[in-house]
Image 1: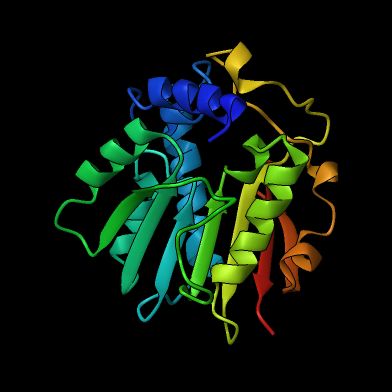
Image 2 (image 1 turned 180 degrees about the vertical axis):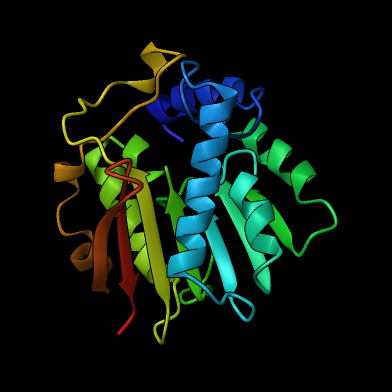
Length: 213
């Protein structure tokens, strides 16, 4: 992990002390707003990925395991990945006794073999990757670890076209946001078929669903 990544991980270690979505969202969000976002995200995932019962699922940027735990009740096996050691420790506690586990890793170099997962999710994750090389490497890794036949990749980020990237180490109450227009053709980078792109809950979320050919 380079110095910049280490500094960023330190910030996320600090944020891991917050409950649920507050570990990711800024302190300006109320508990009621966090609960609403949590519900909307789960509704969206259930709509786009209705049947996960036979799937091995990868939750990238899993944080404290909020979605990983929820997914574990719907999938055959679920793995959460995060670069923050404290986030992973919190996630491991949330996943105790479930068909799931949490692993510490950067998502630009995943410790899994090609085609290891049927479904890969990145929810409120890519928007925090402002380094272009890390961003593109992470997208390629998503395409690498998803199964080449019938695999699915779901990306959900905040829909904020006017956002300006900031260094996460410079602020503890706000998180980095990569502008959606800067995403480019991610499906081509991952060498996957782009199935659907949409906004959800008004324009709160920007969503992409890809499939393997």
